[in-house]
Image 1 (cartoon, protein in one colour):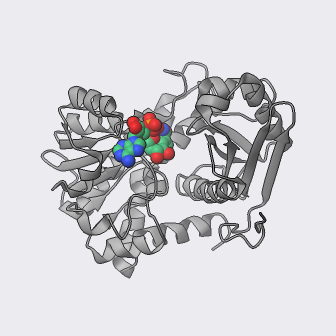
Image 2 (cartoon, protein in one colour):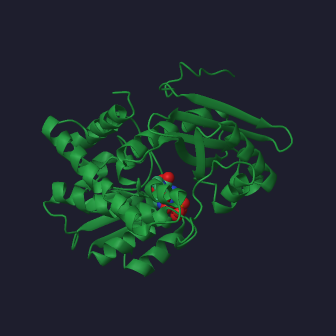
Image 3 (cartoon, rainbow, N blue to C red):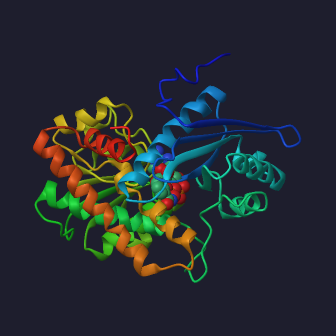
Length: 350
Ligand code: NAD
């Protein structure tokens, strides 16, 4: 098997792509640094049983560029990077493997700072921190909780939803507004709690039935089967589970007037950005909406944790989303394309 790096469709002038291997632990991992134009790159480490290294490379390159865009639009002094470990987090993860990953992160010499992502938790970051100083996602002195960014991600998504509702429904007041949440995990459930407090009507789905049930009990949401969530007659659809859920197959089914959710890479293809516009559905670009987590991580990294400043910075999310949606409407362009152009200008690639 062979694959291109510089000619890879997702390469997009990455500054560094580091392939790591550790014979003692079997670590196979890739660190991708898309841009350090605004500062050292920061992004999560994902551990996933990729079918092969080509799949892992495509994933890390796409995610890394997304982190550049996210940090730029969140007005953070940092760049975008990401790392992936090829393996099953439930079966293959050991402290020695995490130490080896920490050494690989160290070889990026501070151009990449690692954080949690799918399959990698706070304990794993602590193990990496025994080998490198270039870690984040751990609680700062004086901070509430353990540094988990999900509550901030959920709050940022809620603030973004108010702006999207103003544009799509005529009012930012979410009382009585119907919202379908796909994924009752850490972010989806916390978002449901904000929405319940705002008086929204809620529907929720999760492939893990107990998660959906727990969210419903905590928030009064109605549980819907995972495949049926696209068809619920709501005002807002909130993807908070996984990527590539907005596609030629699902967009025509949506009854919602707006899509605002925390999941990364929601568009299955670039064409789905325009497809949403043509369908009359307002799309709030995912990386604008879900930046609350990296904003919070930034304040943990500064330490001691300044909750008031972190909360004020979250207002960059609705502010930027408003700018993107206004420009999209004025120019008749899909919101995702407008956000991408703004992000690229901020990282010197306009
Ligand atoms: P999580 O793992 O806690 O929750 C995800 C939930 O989605 C799980 O309960 C899972 O069972 C469910 N799910 C998986 N496939 C599903 C499907 N097809 N239909 C319905 N439910 C399904 O993850 P999280 O931390 O809540 O993150 C949710 C999403 O937001 C992810 O895409 C993540 O990448 C993104 N995100 C999270 C953060 C954060 O701070 N946690 C920040 C930015 C982006």
